[in-house]
Length: 360
Ligand code: PLP
Image (cartoon, rainbow, N blue to C red):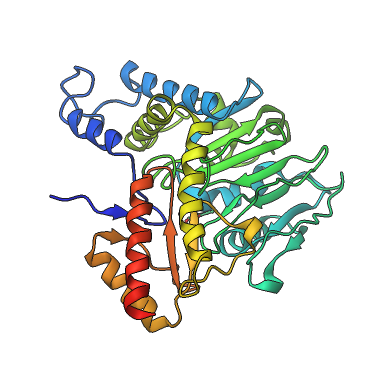
């Protein structure tokens, strides 16, 4: 059976070597005679998988011993609530930048928990087609929350705001491991695994240790970051299979690709190829301010919704899947996550040229 080229926004394409390894180990994991789905989360085999996943994530992101890495269920959406529960300080407002859909959801969730949520900057005035550059922030805030890559609007932060003593908090669900960045200003980073890091079902949460000091004591056990840190993500049964695949994706990134800097170069090539083509003609159009374009999610429009529908249908028949834009915005979107090879983008651009020739 033929594999297709996968441009899904998430769950998204995974590296073929990872999928092959999972298949090979499915009936017997590391000589145990059991699959990873059947083994105890307290076994030494699973603990080794979990600890290796943490070590690899720390190496890939240059996280020193000031940072803890934990695995939590509930998706990035639960982090929208856990962040303010754990990190808001009494008497200090929390600050958010609104860059569309997911950051708006993060804000709405925070407003359920904390009275004083301050939207310090927003790009709503131009339909979220850019990243705000002026972020007014001072020491009176508990933290500043941003969404580093906007999966639906197709924008990405290329220069993180300077926040001085205020910890940055970032939802990196759709660009973690895609480019190099300095983690030190970040108090919390969270990412649902299902785009760049593995399967759905686990969220990677990176916690700078000083953030643990501000956590209120009365939080429910499973909503308190301290539980996950103190119990090494093993307070209760973790999503074993998802963590197992995350470890494999991290290994692929380290050993096959050569780390995040090497991945960044591949991602640059993929994005340049697609944006370069889009900018060279006028059948397809990308609405985003050029310096804020996302390398992970390339959104584009055709001359009419009818042509967009036909484009997605024909592409699917040609084995190019997942190109429909998010239901909230319409249009088209190609997600070029780490698991999408350069070859897939080459095939996509060829198809786009051919489609434009026939319908332009
Ligand atoms: N944040 C971003 C940037 C996303 O792209 C998504 C999902 O696409 C989410 C949050 C929601 O993630 P989850 O479904 O894991 O709750």
